[in-house]
Structure formats: structure tokens, C-alpha cells
Amino acid sequence: MTRPSDEQFRALFEPRGVVVAGASTHPGKFGFVALHNLLASGFGGRVLATNREGAEVLGVPSVPSIEDLPDGCADLVFVCTPAAANVDLLRACAAKGIRAAFVTSAGYGEAGPEGRVAEDELVAVAAELGILLAGPNGQGVVSTPANLCAQIVAPYPPAGRIGVASQSGNFVSSFLNYAVMTGIGISRAVSAGNAAAVTVPDYLDFYADDPATAVGLAYVEGVADGRGFFERIRSVAARKPLVLVKGGATSGGQRAAASHTGSLASDDRVFDGAVHQAGATRAATVEEAFEAAATFATQPLPRGPRTVVLTTAGGWGVVTADAISRGSLTLAALPDDLRAAVDQKLPPRWSRNNPVDLAGGETRDTIPEVLELIASHPEVDAVIQLGLGIQSNQARLMRTGPFYPDHGLDRIVAFHERQDARYAEAAASVSDATGKPILLATELAVASPDNPGPAGVRATGRLCYASANRAVTALDHLWRYARHRQRHER
Image (cartoon, rainbow, N blue to C red; front, top):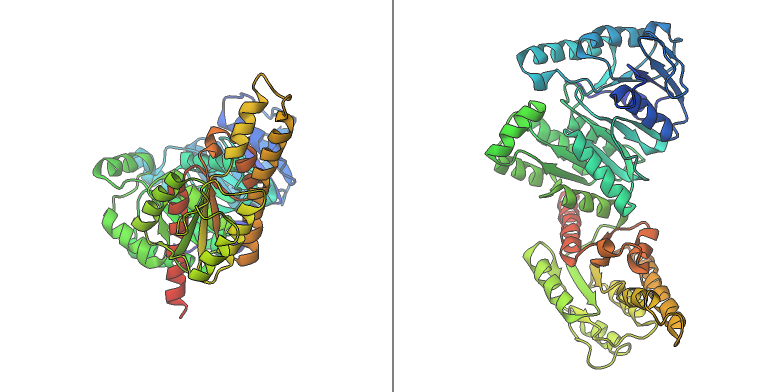
């Protein structure tokens, strides 16, 4: 099947107007929720609705049928009507100039033989009419450059540069929830549903040339055309980073996938090998997939695997060194000239090796200065920094204790909080100046997200990782992708 044109994708992601077909006055119905979310997101284009009784919904006057709308009023129809009504609906939409349809209706391929017949008919009619058909059985589409939230679920994410395509609507919601939690935003997101006409690789192919998107992120369950899938993701990965997470990796998961979206089973080892060969990266979990994509969207690619760990405590450094050694990264040997330079900043008890354990020897400016020395060295490709937020965590205990603000506590609390915010800013500045990834990790990212350390990282537009292992995993995705690009660009 031919990929939709860029013009059709623009009708889906950047429509001038949207019609909600099957708008409802009942707040529990999809037709109400879809219209609510569209209006609440601040969509700037024209919003129209159909309702069998012609009732006003959320202040939007509706009409009984598409035929009652003016010509050229919208590019996208968001379909909440029963499956049996949708063929005639598409014909009416095409007559009004609508070029894209998102179909939420169920009862198609996922419902058995009769549903597959209905789905085939819907696909054929959409192709005949020149309409991009998204879904059916999907949850919706998000496009932050257009303030578009045409979906039947929450949330509406912050704007960013991750493009999401998923065979599961719930995983779209998961990715959007992670975006809200971390502040690392989304450009486009679409629930492909049964992907009857427009497939996940089609969306990813559009994202690969989309200026608003820096990285593709996809959840897939089944691959009907293995060779075709491989060629598509290889083409995407040659243009932009691509992170995949796959359901149905086991026999139990494959049975669940067949019931969920009607997807066919595929050999997981073959899939894994194909993804690797294509230059995409595969994540083991949805959480890992989002963090990998968030890292691609906010950090530069490493030029090599040599990684230095900068830590304020020895144990964290040891565990991080283990994690690095288990993957494709390498624990960089500390060059003599770098060791000598760090000697000038720290007392003799520092580790004098990698991990660079400051051993409590830091003063006001030590951490930013040592970080800059390490990241600027030509034999270092990336840095993982640990220990952020410790001072502010103590400050929090002081601020909420019985002695605050007396005994000088007000001054030391303010100092600690300024320092952690400063460390976060310094990491982003040094990364920008050196063009190297610098990842900061602390469990305070989830245990105390308002701590000035992780809050400061979020303010720089980067991800604060909840553990060193998760930072290493994300950096490992970046290096494997960068290595693939280096090998194929020679």
C-alpha cells in the first residue's frame, strides 16, 4: 500500500479545521470527550461537529450530517460514529474537501472475519476518495505545533521533539504521561489502531522528514510484511534516530496481540536482528523507550563510547561502572593530563581514576570546574554525573525542621539550593559548549521532583534520570545509534 502524501499527513497533523463526527452531549461518550479535548488544547483552527439531533455541544453548534457543513471548512474528520455508518460518512467528507480521517470506531479487523471485511471496504473507499485513513480502532492524534489534541484520552503533552506512533492507544497515553512527568515534550503522536491503511512505518517515515520531530518512538505488536517493515525502518533510521518497543515477544504476548489489534505473530529474534541491522534501537520496556527517545531529543550524540562517571560518592560510581561495562560503552581510562588537571581542583583523597569520586572534596566551584575539565578532554566522549540534589535534600530537612530559620539555617539552606540549581545549569552549558552528552542521575528525580537539582535539570529542557543504570541505558542507545551512523557514512 502506498504511503500517504505529505499533503495528506499535513491534513492529519496540521489541519485548518476539524470536524468531530458523532459529537455527543453526554460527557461519558467518546464524541463528547473528543470535542472537549480538541477545544481544551487551544486548537486555533475551525472546530465543527455533527450530532444526529443537531444539538449544541460545549458551545459548538452542530449539524445533523456532514452534508450540512460548508465546503472546504475542514481538513480532518475525527470519527466517533458506529462502524456501519462510516463508509457513507467518508464519501460525504470527501465531497466537502476533507483529506484525512481519524476513525475511533471499533468492530473492524480486531472483531473477527466480518470486521475484517468491513475494514477492507473502509480502506478501499478511503483510497478511492484520496482520504488518509488513520485507525480504525484508535484513540486519536496529537500535534503540538498545531495545538491539536484530537483524542479520546488524556493527557495533552508539552511541546517537544519526539514523534510517537503506536499500535496501542494506551501506550500513546503512557508516552504522553511520561512527557508530562519529565517535561520532555512531544511533536506528534498518533494511535494507529488497527493500522488498516496507514501503518506505524508510514507515520515514522513522515516524522523522519518532519522539521518538528527529532526522534521517532514507536510501539508495535505485529509485523505482517517483515521485509517491507525492515526496509522502511532502515530508511527512517538513516535520517533520524528511531526507538522501537515491541509487544508480543512471547507466545502469551502474541496471543494477546492477536486479540488486541489482530496482529500476526513474528519471531522475536528475527525482529530483534532486523531492528539492529536497520540502525534503529530497541528498548525492553515502555519506560526505557521513552527515556531513550527523550535522550535523543535533548542530548548530542556521542562521538565514541568513552564515558567518565563524575560522582560525589564512591558506591554510586562503582555500580555505574558495572552498568557501563555490561553494555556497548567503555569506562574511559583517565588520561594523565586530565588526572593532573583534576589534582589542581581537589584534595589528594579523590579517587584519581574513573569513576571520578570527589570524596567530599568539593567546594563552591569544584563540581562545574571539574566537569568542564572532563567533558572538554578529547579522550572523553560522554559524562554521567551523580550526586545532584544531595545538598538540597538536606536543606529541605532543615527548612521543614523546628530550628529553621534560626542558627544560620536560612543562609545554608539558600546556599545548598542555589548550588544544586547551578550544577544542573552547568551540566547543560558544558554539554552545549563541548557537543558531548552529559547525563545527570538521582533518585530524587522521582522521590523529590521539586528538589532544585532535578528541577534545575528539567528547566534546562533535559531529562533527569531516576538512577545511574537508567542513564547508562539511555546513553547506550545513543552510542549504538551513533556507531551505526558512523559505520554507514564512511
